[in-house]
Image (cartoon, rainbow, N blue to C red; front, side, top):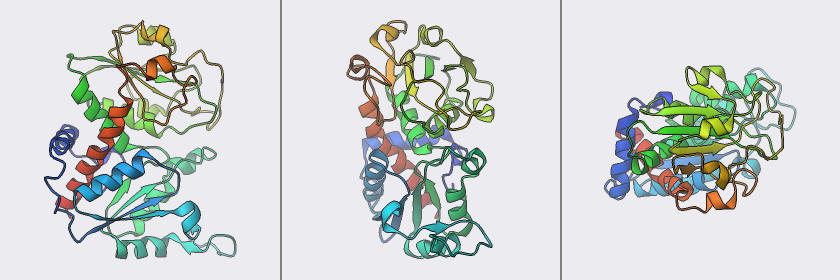
Length: 315
């Protein structure tokens, strides 16, 4: 594995999750692997779990860590070729990526979707520009369309918690006051394609995801129907895809409640965090003993550590 842009870059999903599990059991086992090497974490958007877990993962492998917030600590970057840079953007990606590569042995980047230009978002301009001009491996810490580190942590959580053969796992849309990107849902679906499970996606009509991502997975537009006998319910909001970036409904009928969870097979609840209480999910569900959100967050460290170890092994 030479980089991590999406889960497609992971050569063997089961092997990667097994490595994350082993690292969780002995997180200091490879504490010298990254000795005398540096990872740069570049944040174009805010972060809590991703920033801290990736820093911790890197340090557990002996890497030095540099962090930069591009929103307020760096020159604005130009990505287009042939432009006359007479405006606000002072630094071109051609120089920036090459310079960062001189300072770092691995570069990890977080850059969200704009939710205004679908074609531009799907081109993954920031990540792909760094990949084009950088000379070191690039790791996606969440981009416009993908969040592979979260999906790997989710896969580890499922491996640890769900032991039923072919469990029913539901990815459910939930309401949110802001338009949110598709990255988490996209990567969760890609991860589920590697699981032996009865997988169902449910959302209101008009909120279909990219059909190339959905593939042959079953989509149900009735949340109650989808939740019946579920063993795991993963909740996430995303904006419309066809009417890109739009919020089509704001009512709370799709909020996950204790009453809805009674339709399930005493299901586990999952969410990537942060989460808006009593908007996306009720307090009763989030605070229930079957809620896995804190363990998911914990597993972010070992998912990131598995990815970084794999990159270091192949450096």
